[in-house]
Length: 81
Image (cartoon, rainbow, N blue to C red):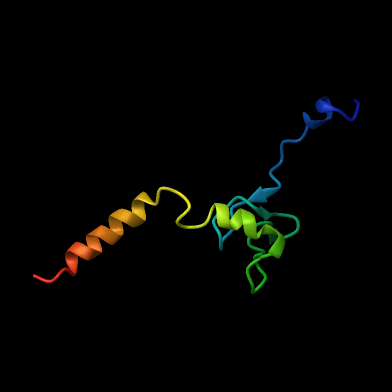
């Protein structure tokens, strides 16, 4: 078998499972470390070179439907009567 596409056929074991802290399927089973948040390290995994990506998918960059609805409900609940 060569080193191309056919060699990827026998690979069927999961390398990553769900992380307890961030909930993503990024926890490497053999390493025992999350690729996204760095769990079990005490501090969250964070690098300066990824700031632009974080900005792009940060809260407020999308439609924010849930937040808009929640905020509207709170405003109605605490509105002066």
